[in-house]
Length: 274
Image (cartoon, rainbow, N blue to C red):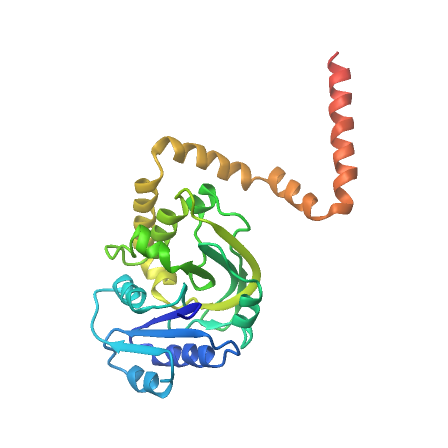
């Protein structure tokens, strides 16, 4: 059984698919299975897939009912301990990405790295997974799908992607699984992949549906009273004092002088009141 199965889904994106398949084939680390699920593309995607056929490579091309049915097909055919979704257009950051990842010896149920996002003009921006997974993070954001390894057992224990979603099925899965007691999380400070922002989930035309589906997930898993608390925590976290505190914590040479100033101010205030 390979340690990793990489799953790629595609529909009529032959250019993006070729970039993805090349990136996977270039990896120095070779102990993985690659599963490609094509939705009966009408372009030349199938001929491109055939160019990359090799050992531990599985592919099918048949109609499906959406992104998450295609992903579930990939899950059902994956044999690795961990699954990583690198869909057409997405690529690994470098040919040594998997080597670098495996050097950390992933061991948790969810293993999260970082990625860069690339838009249609080629501009990129860094996106980071959280160092610790919390309910607040899942409420306000998500895990970065193309940079998060998912242990195969999670799909067996908690179910597959909910195919009733068109855009946020991966978010629903991460919330459903991430809130479970006993599901472990590991953050690895590694730039693993590059995410193509021209896909459906990032398309502004689908912004309204994206928001509606996200609200549906939140209402399903976060009771209303907890939502109120999380909204309060979100405001505190994104306020200026919190960001100032976080900045101070990262600049250790400033931490002690600032702590001393706060203590002196507190002491002075108490004496003034007295």
